[in-house]
Amino acid sequence: MKASRSLRAAIALPASLALAAAAGCSSTPTDNANTGSDAGFVSAGRCEFALGAAAQPACSIYTGEAWTPDDAAADCAKRKGQFAASGDCPTTGLLASCGEGRITPHEVQTVISGSDPRGCVLAQRGCFIYHGGVFSPAAACAGAFPDDAAHSPFPVFTPPTKSCVAPRAGEPAGQGADGKVCTWSTISASTEAGRNFADYGDCEAVLTQRPYFVVPPHAAPAAPDVRLSDPKYASELGWVKAQIQASACVCCHSTGFAPRGTSQWYLEAPGNFMDSFYDTGLALGAGWVDSKAFGAYDPADDNGFDRIHSGFPSTDPARMVAFFKDELAHRGKSQSDFASALPFGGPLVDQLTFRPGPCKSGDGIDATGKLTWSGGPARYAYVLEATAQNPTVPPNLDLPQGALWRVDAPYDGAPFRSGLAWGVAPPGTVQRFPLANAPPAALSVGQQYYLYVAADVGAPITRCLFTR
Image (cartoon, rainbow, N blue to C red; front, side, top):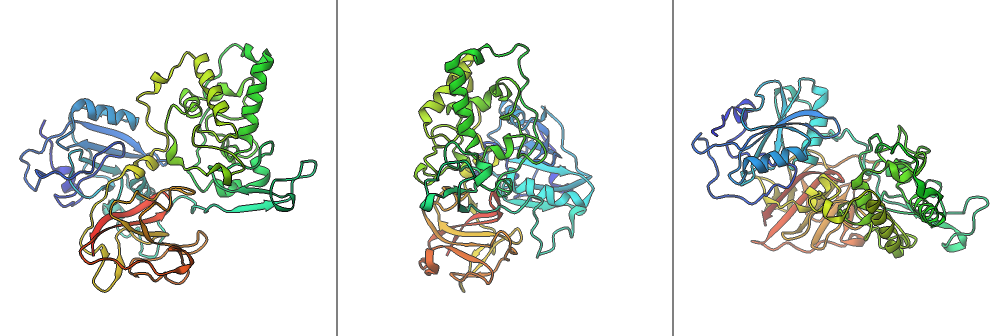
């Protein structure tokens, strides 16, 4: 079906602006991209959905040549949206549009509705996290973003820190020097087995590292779980619970520590706390749904806990996986039931698989060695080899192989602006790579490099390839 170009016109976007879908979109440029003409401009459907944690009303039209109506409907379902085979998105009452910044076979034009300027920052963050790269404010958001603003509605990400403290009264000596207990305050970390993470880690820091929401648990079955009377099962259940209690999971999944209520499953659920898990949560534990986008420690640096084979950290991952597989079997589920399940991580997965395109004019490093980007102040700036993986979350995904230079703003300091001199960290910032403030390698003239700049961990604002 033919679709109107009024969506672009309503927010004065250039004809070359492509608005990429949040889930599973290709970013490979096409040679027969649309120009200013209506010729060939077709739509595979429309999706009305809520964008991000703020549930900002948003609407997308699937205009890329690779979309089919069935594919578009499936993508809309992933966003929990309402799909229609025809029709336009709103052209008035808009806060902004967002997207990737170039036309692709899976082009999706998206607008965010609203009239309250207080929603502009939330719209911008949802655009960066869920759609990737380009935020174009409409009139309602004009002037909402001064150059020196941090632009973040979420708490600033507190980087991982490791603390070593004396064990609590009545507990055995720790495994660290002088009998201390050493724990990373990170969402993917664990304290020593047999202890509670909240006693040794910092849940306040953990809660800044991933958006925290109160979500009701899975409905409990009407009848009590008879397996609780089986000593063998009860023992395994107790072991799983103790393993989880040692992990940072308690910060969101324990009534004693989640600040406004628990998120989905929780350790204190009446009866069998496994009943509070949704099926996908059990599949996370079984390793049937990928969760590598969340990040993981080397067990040797995390009190022996492994989060690589199961989504739940464990000192015996094979045992943990077996327990959750049995739990799924008890519900009549098999691995094939999760064959089409999306990996855990949402926008983190999208960021890992993002493929950058060419930088806009002016972004990159100029002949004088000045590093510039679009999107506002930043807390993280990277220059990487062109083929490097996208940086995402610590502890193991934030400094990919191929990084050439990285500058961070302290989490409790001010972000920095575009215009860095190559190899010179601005005052108040820290050079994270190369280490020991060694100068980065010289860039080669004519060579392509990857510029990755983020307003915070998980919130990229510029991701593009430039040629020196």
